[in-house]
View 1 (cartoon, rainbow, N blue to C red):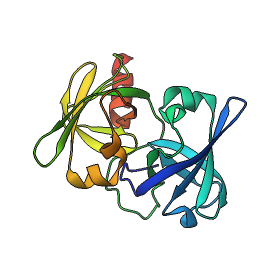
View 2 (view 1 turned 135 degrees about the vertical axis):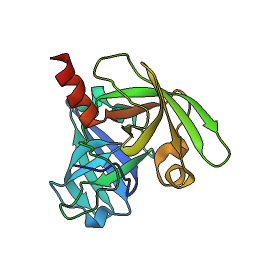
View 3 (view 1 turned 60 degrees about the vertical axis):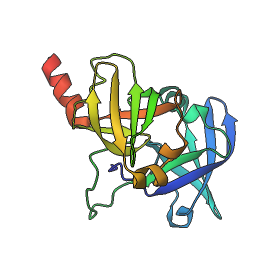
View 4 (view 1 turned 120 degrees about the horizontal axis):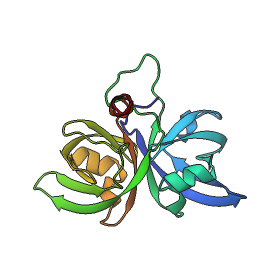
Amino acid sequence: MFTGIIETLSKVEKIEKEGTNVHFTFSSSITSELKVDQSVAHNGVCLTVVSISGNNYVVTAIDETLKRTNLGELKVSDVVNLERCMPANGRFDGHIVQGHVDTTATCAKITDINGSWEFIFKHEKSSKNITVEKGSITINGVSLTVVDSRDTTFSVHIIPYTFENTNFKTLKVGDKINLEFDIVGKYVAKLLKK
């Protein structure tokens, strides 16, 4: 389980294909604290550390993960948001994040609002893709609050700290991002369907 509070950024050092799998080699400021078999969220995608060497570590993404997320579009030198799973005795600063991306969305608009930024994202219409104003949403692993909610779009506002310490500062209109909708909202929607 994760909270959506990003610890640091991680840089893609190498990408290797093996069948339908892709092995990503990343470097980060917390590599020395990682362990093999540990779950780490990369842009909100829970992946297992399979090896560590110096400042680099390797995770493997299967075909299903590559199809459902933006990881398949990563290139060497790209930067991703990084969060280790929450310790059992840790604070719950964000919201419940599973690291299981529901879908991707496209950045539709970015507006500098004099001290913070408004990002508008567009996603496919689906009874599973539910946002609620003032509800939680996870974008590339970042726990955020929805400002405006529509059937296929929603907006969030990003404070300077989040902008500077996540890969929001590299996002451009047209970029694909990973979305994990609020787990409570997903369960409520499923119950109401029954």
